[in-house]
Length: 194
Image (cartoon, rainbow, N blue to C red; front, side, top):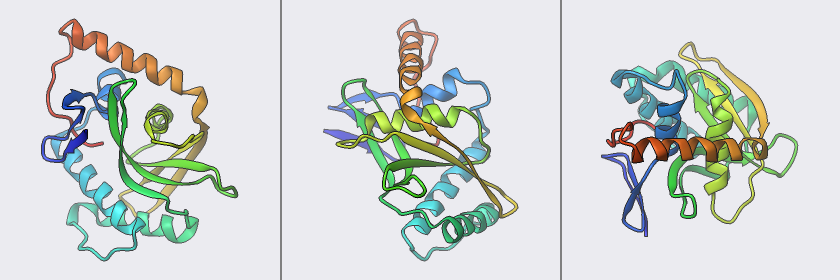
């Protein structure tokens, strides 16, 4: 059975702990580190994004007022078709897991696309979306995109990536991460924000 412990932010597959997508990226791609305050705010923003996507009422945390305004603008203006929200995905074959923010459709098509909400956009979003697409059960997902959610209430959609071009690189990153763990250069601890 696959499980996710939200308190420890730990994923398991068949009772065995596995790395999460963000841990791999944080370990190997510069700039993925953040202070505890920013990680906590990121968790709040992602929780709010899920509520906005599902049309739920909620109290906006003070640390996320601008980002929630941006999220509401994004959902009002872009009108993404919400297929799945905050979905834990598990790759039993490759032994990793993660939580994708939003599964929607590529604009103008019915092709599934992963959206990931970010504080800033970098190329690493392509690898993150590719990892989620690779692990998503029962579906082939070829498209992914980051959406920068800004503190000033604005947003910016990033480039739409053909994730097939990034899946092998994701597996290379995962392999490097696992070698670092085996060699003792990567300390195991609870993960941060997904």
